[in-house]
Length: 370
Image (cartoon, rainbow, N blue to C red; front, top):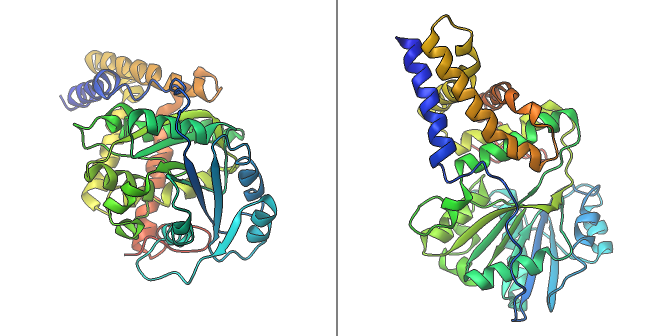
């Protein structure tokens, strides 16, 4: 009886995810918006800490600006390398962040410092982006056009993450798949749903929307700052939009499994609000939804095996579009249960790091403190 209940729960979960979760798995780039007739100014703010190997390429990619005024500000978050010098050589206005105040995450403090320097520019929009993001030549113009056409307060793109090494090939598409499963873009855009999310590598926001939420200081301690910003904007009546792009890309490399594990564990337990109950529920849920289907096929219970096979087929069909988006073989789709185990382990490591005072570790800085 227990096997049948697990099998039924697993199949029911995949029927729901496949048919009723906002079509999150149908990952595809949206149609390009028509160019905006109005001339708008954009101030780009890039927080950076020890990014000398990639920051120059990221800033250079912003040069084909396609709008009347784009001002690029890089805020150096106490780097010990040549990040600031390389950014200045690439054409950015570089400022040093002040000492990190208690209660702030490093990234949000750097953005806050950048906003202070940008205040005199009075731009129509701010673009928050990262030092590893290489923008398509017309990306800013498209973001502005989408915001203007849809009267949106916040527009965000999940940029295409690097997917070259074996570890990246196996794990990065799943990272994007899981993100959109949590935050279906169709639901993010709907005003009648509370679902709110953004992707921190590329966020265009109106200054008025920032003012309504009380500025960046209102989310100063958030580790998952992009989604916190989106929630705050939507919570004050703002309209938001989240999409995906295959032209604007991240060049940050995650060559090994341990690097990806560290990337996931940095924020996974914060995503669960540091709740032991949510952690246990997540482990159980991932087990039933992802791990159980192939195992059920091996049982001697015909009903459980049939349900497990059906769930695994739906899982494979749902994951295939993400693999195609990343140019990877759909033959990898049946391996999603193994990939899910990796993410469960990274989530457990995230909780352990938090409990031992090493939560949210980034660039030698603990950011998720008990």
